[in-house]
Length: 297
Ligand SMILES: C[S@@+](CC[C@H](N)C(=O)[O-])C[C@H]1O[C@@H](n2cnc3c(N)ncnc32)[C@H](O)[C@@H]1O
Image (cartoon, rainbow, N blue to C red; front, side, top):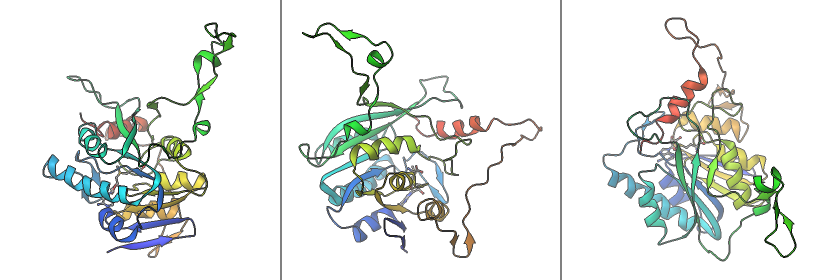
C-alpha cells in the first residue's frame, strides 16, 4: 500500500522505494537524487531487518533502484549514493558504465564508542558523486567553499608567480569530508539508527542544486535531505517504508501536527539516563556506539 502526503513544495511517499520510483516518478524529472539505502549490515529500521540472504541478493536489489534513479534524474542532474565500504565497489563498477563518477567522497568522523582492537576500525562511509552528462551539470563551487589554511591562517605569499600573490583564503573542499555524526545532544537528533547530519546534506544540496530545484531521497529515514532542502529553498520528494520514520517526516518537513489521530510532537530527550547500578550514562557515548556498528569493513 502506498500513501502520499504533500504540500506545494514537498511530497512524502509511504511505501516501498522500488515500487514508488517505478510507478510514481516521471523520467528525467528530478535535479538531484541523494540515496542512503540500507547497507546490508544487520541494522534494525523499525520492523525492517537490514540483512539480505546473500551479498548478491543485496546488490541485485540495489541495481533495481539505481536503474530507476538513473531514469528519473534529469539530463543535467546529479546522483549521490552511499552504501557500506564493502558494497561500494559493486556500485562503483556498475555505475561507471552508466554515469560519470565525478568524485569518490569519504565522509569521515570521530568515534567515541566501541573501538576495534584487532583490526583498523571503520571511521568513514563512502559516497559516489555521479552525473549523467559530464559537460552539463550543476556545481555551485562558490556556495560550498571552505577555509584554505595556507592563505587564511598562515597568510603565505606565493613567490613562484611572476607577481608575488597571496595564497587563496578559500577553496572548494576535496573529497575527504569531516562532519561530526548526529549525537543525542544535538538539536537535529531523531530516534533512528543511521541519521545523517544536516551539515553533510547541506554541502551536497548547495553544490548540486539551485533554489527551486527538485531533490529526491528514496530512503528518507529521518528526512534529513528534505529538511535541508526546505531550509535552502529547494523542493523535495521523499520515500520511506517504516511508519515510525514517516511520522518524523510529516512533522519535520510538512509540519503536520497529527497523523491518524496521533499527536506528532518532537522527540522528548532525557538527559539523565542511569544504568542499573544508578550510574549516569554518557549519552554521546551511547550514540557513538550505535554508529560504530554502521560499517563493518
Ligand atoms: C540508512 S537509512 C536513511 C537515513 C537518512 N539518510 C537519514 O538521514 O535519516 C535507510 C532508510 O531506508 C528505509 N527503507 C528500508 N527499505 C526500504 C524500502 N524498500 N523502501 C523505502 N524505504 C526503505 C529504512 O526504514 C531506513 O529508514
